[in-house]
Length: 92
Image (cartoon, rainbow, N blue to C red; front, side, top):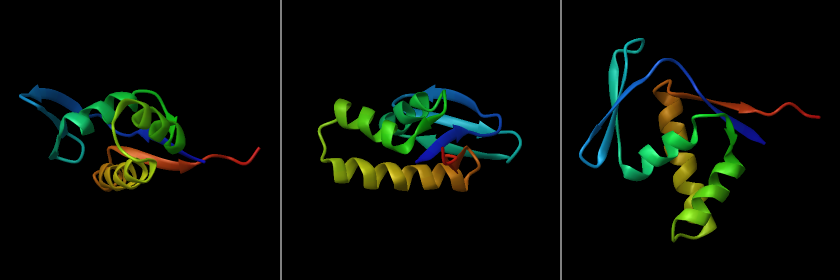
């Protein structure tokens, strides 16, 4: 199970329907759609990819496959920008 954790210091500002994020550390901006901003809010505390997808499936009208695929693409993009880390959970 992969855990998602926010990484670094990100400043955010709501601009219309978009959430703008700025990292002073990485010196760049990310613009998130309304859905992306919602996912960012769900990442306030560490959460597993499975739990995140389950929450989104309950909230949006999409198939489990769509939710999983689009969420994984979005998370990879956030990780590429240093906004999150994707950590495999330790085996118990």
